[in-house]
Length: 228
Image 1 (cartoon, rainbow, N blue to C red):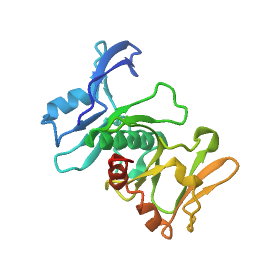
Image 2 (cartoon, rainbow, N blue to C red):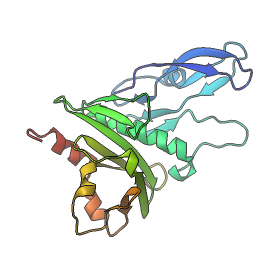
Image 3 (cartoon, rainbow, N blue to C red):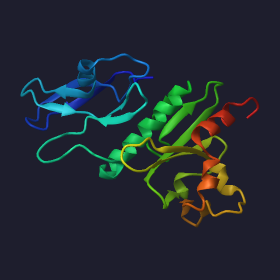
Image 4 (cartoon, one colour):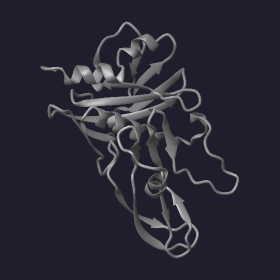
């Protein structure tokens, strides 16, 4: 599903003129038959005073399922990102949220963004009407540790952690969905850990089989099952 048009206010980087326009945060060409001219219109804005073009951060899913993150400004010597490693941390975070938003929508879940970021990045509603708050995390490659401040996450049944692992080039990331109450369980492996300040995910080759149990699609099937 393609995101609906979003109204925004823009300050022109070149002349400082303030104007209003719209863009689509995500576009799914597997479902919507938009041409390249419309993609340009939906991902850029042109200043009415000086005609400077601004590129917006837009996630594009091509007909074959390949993902592109368009709209990155291309000024001076800055080149388009050639791999996930080329993206800045805020850019990767934005992509991660958009990817999970798209994946939830594909499963016919409703998705909302809270006005204030207090440890919840997405508010979702399953097809059966059950609400889940979601904290989104994205990391590049293995091994790595994900740290979540304990004051930002109090484990409860309706709180989930969505984790994306980005690997080489622009291959689709691995997606996982972890119930926050997993940190309260006693486990034989070291995948989850806790300290006085943090909840931790210890992802490594040794713990990867345990992490696969939280595959995103599989977990959604579990959450959508009757009686879950």
